[in-house]
Length: 268
Ligand code: 13P
Image 1 (cartoon, rainbow, N blue to C red):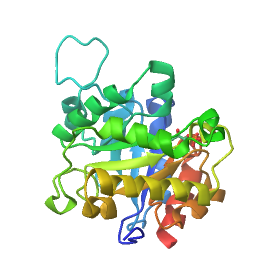
Image 2 (image 1 turned 180 degrees about the horizontal axis):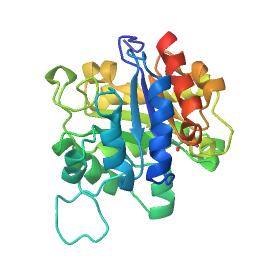
Image 3 (image 1 turned 180 degrees about the vertical axis):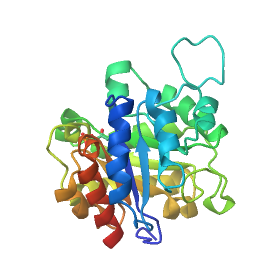
Image 4 (image 1 turned 60 degrees about the vertical axis):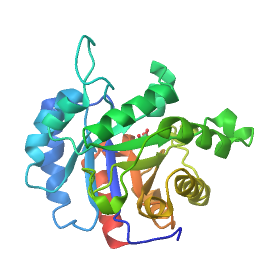
């Protein structure tokens, strides 16, 4: 059950805190042209909040989907500076990244906060891309799987995921949750995990999803790898039986490089 290749490949660009409108539009001019004809692979762009409307408009009719990089868990109210799931939905976001390690590390996001954010995304029918991953220290101590398990159990505690056949989520496959394995030591460092190592973690995550939910959800859920992915190493990851795509930071800022990855995914 653990290598169901019926899952559609998914490629997500996390632009992080990059680009103003003119840069985003120039990027899209090049990128949309290059990926014309890519159909089997689902492509998602996650620009900063300030660009969601501009990018959303420019993507109209391309089949490329929009994601936010974060959300706040309350619906509305006195929460200065925060953005709700409903606001993201209003701008046409199909996905939202939740629990990125940069937010865990720099902004003190805990598994409890992440759990509330996931709940808010699910309620608004925005598919969440949950990020999990160990630090270098944790990896050296042989704690990778223990850390993944703690993060997953904490983030998903008490959540009811509709079974994929209910098709309730807004993600490309009607799902409401994607998990991205992003070892912290591989993010922005140029040092990627070995594909086999990432596969071992992806398999661990899939088996845990089966335990926490059920085997149907585990078979259908898409698991991404993130951390120094670029065109030269991308193929090695998506060929792994339990890795369904990538969450790309730095290399996604180059429209040529990101388009190249979409074409590689399309051929595999
Ligand atoms: P890099 O691709 O820059 O290593 O970033 C990965 C990441 O954090 C994606 O969310």
